[in-house]
Length: 83
Image (tube, rainbow, N blue to C red):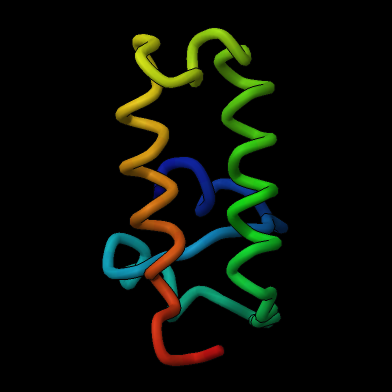
């Protein structure tokens, strides 16, 4: 991530940094923390996965279904206790 961000004067990073992004934290000038209900986040994730891979790929039994469900389960729980 340093190779992507450090050469640029301005950058925006979005999403959960949960551990992997810790080295970038000292470089932040501003942090905006948004809290959205889990149902809303899951809905958005499903829409994004469908756009990225196609509805057929993320459908039950399809090649991307299991990975999508595992990702959504992980993302649904990463803010456990904050809502």
